[in-house]
Image (cartoon, rainbow over all chains, first blue to last red; front, side):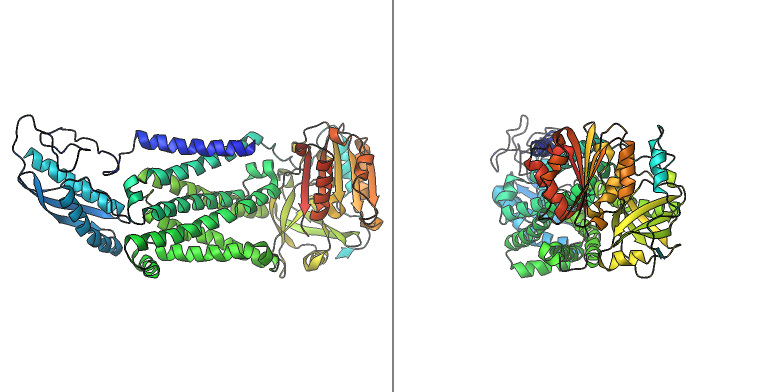
Length: 156
Length: 468
């Protein structure tokens, strides 16, 4: 009887947190389709679609060209912003615009994983990249910043 | 000074029996508060809700992609075991936190038993956490395990303290393994055990600084910090603060030590405001006699009578250096107390009638418990001893039983001569009674086993074990 109630309570606790998580917490990029930007601007990369595909804009058909700096993303161990260059809707370069970290370890880690993340973005041609294990937060921040840069380029 | 006669000058037991027989509660101390069973049930449910929530926390911060990445599975399991292990460690701390509302319902015996039963889990989970994450990070960073371990120490925040904490935990857990523990002096083992508080405090920083469920999740970070903060508060208040306050407030000192039997002494203490000490008959205190050789160790002894302000009395059987030192205590010696603890009280009675069974010095708890039992409980009291002169406090017990129109028996003789089935001859209606059993561990275990074999319901059996 007691065992049943302890198991039931554990399951209830588990379910409670999962429900809370599903309801309120923002999903991680790469884990699930990120929510569409509030101003659904033309040329915005539609989340969840295959890498590289962009929605056909209602008004403009010109693929984005130029350079934009993404938002600076806080990621627990630091903050990171990237600069994205596009040529006719094709991502040709990603570089780090700014990087501050809480401590030396995160700095080292970021410097290790940023080239990998850059390669992932270049090959995926979008911000839909998988997180580098052991650097999940850096990966998420990187992806989010890339996405915001792409959004900026698409609305230019 | 040990008086050799068997009467006390200041503590008149017959007076206590007479006073108790009046309709009113004696002018003695305040009765212990009623245990709130529901509160303990709620606490149990909340505890397990929290456990489920911890597992969920580890699961919800994880994504399929992370799981698929190099070292991802080990990383996830490492985080999960870390969270679950430290949560269970928190529960273990609370189990021995001497929280009065919990103590009154479950009693220290059961709480310590639960603490012991749970013990292997947190330490195993936390060890698994450390090993798994070292392997996971090594795999992810494509480096060696030892190199990764060095990296943790050198460049991760709060990992040096966490590693020290792990080391402490392993040592402390080691000393608590039965085969090692029984070779250590109780006081030394206990002193080592207290370092667990330090270990848990040291480990806390790395959980908050690195835990994926906490970094970037201010809400979970807040809840986790509050949980540990309030646990620390509970420990400080109930394990240290309240005993210190009670000791200072009541200012107990030894008034008299007198012989009860061949190797049993009673210590009568005098104190202030004892009418405000919330204690029930059958409960015990941890006693600390503040003399040069004894101040650093606390030992559990039952009150052998309800307090008679300004006096209260404990009775100690002389086994070991410590108990013989108790016999040498001088009047005026200051006494510090922790307690009262124990759920061996009249509050837990569920039936109108009772049977009280004491082995040896276990009579002390029965003696004070009797005072709390009403006059119509038809008590049958059975005192068990190997020799007639080992029966102590018998005259007081007889008096209390007489006032309740109950029956009194002594079972004297060696273990081979006295079969415990005799209990059922003396108490033919055992099944209709609440049965209180106190005494040395072996005795209590045998009686409880006999009762259970003969079909006495488990919730009617209450026991208090004396560790000698």
